[in-house]
Image (cartoon, rainbow, N blue to C red; front, side, top):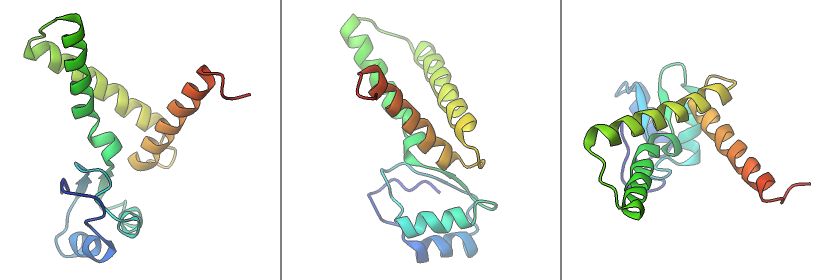
Length: 131
């Protein structure tokens, strides 16, 4: 399932129906937080049946390619498809490795949260905001 509409569109009841009656095997968020907190908890309760990849991980490719476009424009470059694809695959592998390494409970959701928190703390430290 690829929810790509809007925030808080899928609640706990909808998620339970999708898991038990529709037999979904994965949720890959295309929108920013399309599932309510209770719906996310329902997913966590069924992590043995359903793969959950939150938007912060699933949407990284689109954000990254936008960054590639900005880089090309600033440098007045024009990368061909294979160059962009190679850079995208490298970036996504790096993101997955960070999530996978960070996710102590085996959850990509927890791993994505931990990896994001580590990046935030490192940036704050680099700026001298931490003692």
